[in-house]
Image (cartoon, rainbow, N blue to C red; front, side, top):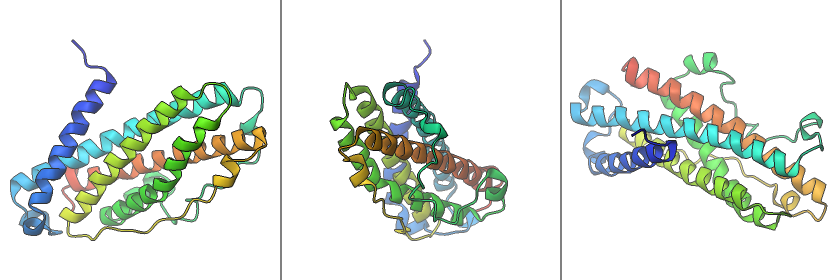
Length: 228
């Protein structure tokens, strides 16, 4: 019997948590940036960790696209939000590669830190996205459920990235850009509030695609090319 995407994700997420727990036990012994110096079993586990983290990032990108479509169908129908001048994403100030070609020219450690910064920048924003949706008119329960799933998967990706950084001898990167759009999400003007949600989810989709692209390049360089 074929597994559903949810079942596949649950299985892989459980494997990710197991790998993270296993790798953390060895953190003080095998924290090194040289592949050849690592125990072969640890190296294999790191490869699996990157594969699983990249897979989850792909799922997040897909689920965020669905969230934006469902939000637009329910709250933006006929409002032409896509034709308006878009709001600036709060992470736009990050100097990150703009496409896969640029990413391929970056050091995998640098890309990992970019990913960690993007993830950190969405922690607070995702909390407010989930919480403030409950005040939307109509029935936003399906949207809230999807947003919570995305938030949980962002946490999984963050755990995987933090562990990978630690295992290659890099310190956790706490750099992030603060999100300041709460007042717009709580506006008494329904159009302002809806457009703010639309913009926020659009930015989340933009960044989730970046994260997925960067992790694919990192996996290619560190696993396929064995370039640590």
